[in-house]
Image (cartoon, rainbow, N blue to C red; front, side, top):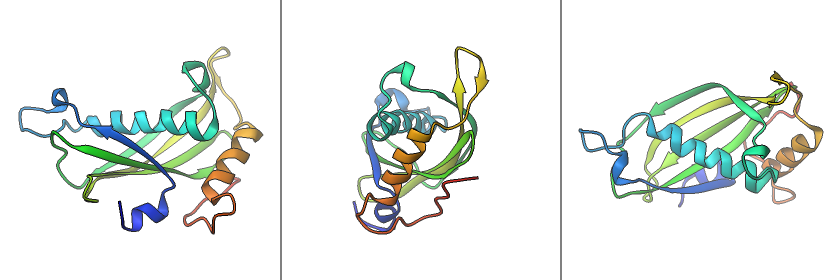
Length: 154
């Protein structure tokens, strides 16, 4: 894929639109970009942070905004691009774009997640190790300047 979105996002996750995703109007129901995003977020946490399986997901969704730019139809392979734009004391913000194979922007938005201790039932600080891994990944680990609004503290 080409375009500005490729430069702004290092992490990409492919998702195939399933026939069952279609609503009576012939496009993916408006809730489906959230599912596609969640698949990409789990892959980011697994592949970037190194936390695998359900036990490795130690965050909860606090806020999400989705903008719809185009119709998602079947059959389509989507590119879900995702990056962490801010890490706070207990939370982190991610921005995303969902594009068609031809680069057309179909959905975009942002989410805020809070680190969570499921055993205790309370929020927890972002572990320093997780902060370092994400910061290094989003900065490009020596592959050039990170383009975005990443703020390591806040």
